[in-house]
Length: 385
Image 1 (cartoon, rainbow, N blue to C red):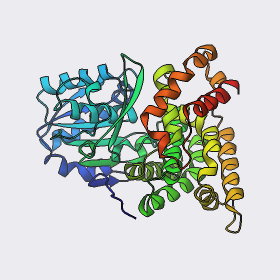
Image 2 (image 1 turned 45 degrees about the horizontal axis):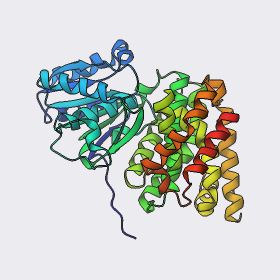
Image 3 (image 1 turned 120 degrees about the horizontal axis):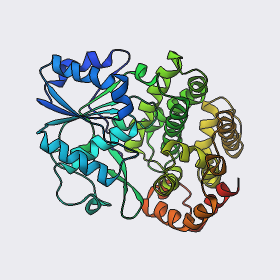
Image 4 (image 1 turned 45 degrees about the vertical axis):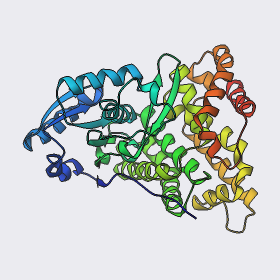
């Protein structure tokens, strides 16, 4: 087996991680652009980061014009601020949107042309140093080589990647996630779970990613219900932050598959939060590809304690799928109808969404690759639930 492994070069984890990392921030530059959301700004956390920077002789400016998930327009607005303010490094603070936007700003501050010019290409260049600080436990963006954005001209959600997008420093303080409401805790937690399951059952998996994924899946099955039931449960929050980190590290080497491939178009076309669309799709997507690698799904079943070592692979895999379905019911993952989508419009967009999913390349990472028609069939099942 031949594989490579990469992640952020330095991570500070745990309560007080920002303070532990503060002395290293000065080595990255003299003026930081802090990319964050308006809600995070109101909580005072952005002020805390600015104070830490100031104490270390670093100027900063806040860019928080992030009305939704990243778009090309939002990103290029951030590029203008970065250049106008003459910043030399970037701090992403918040959930997946600020972290992905920070990466994209770093890239597009250097790369010429429009964002769409780089579709399907590996991004590289001398990008501004990145520091990523998550306030949710799910995307793993703080340690990944990816960002996702919507091209507003085509309503296509695109995944861009490159090792140059990895942050110099990741700062993960699980106490920052305690204020996350139930809806975000659920969405981001399910995103992390899908990362771990997909990476583990991906045809590009390797022993290192397997190790991270198995541990992440075990933690999430145990602690996501607890974090959703009581947001102040520090033990649950800590374990969810660690699981999100593990899953994020894993997808750098063994990327996502069918769930993410089919989820991104739902987000682009209907603005459903990424983690929720993942959660809606997870059971039916995995049911469709289960027989591509029964052994790997069975191993997940053993890891969470619902399958036995002496179960045949098919039985073990089906037990895992049943446990996943039970979890989505327990956590009250909404159907398309319950979420309030226009089901007629959804039906009309199914062919485009399936085409975008296939074009993304993610479904091809499965051991069993589903055709465009099969993916339309999954969208049909979701719509009729």
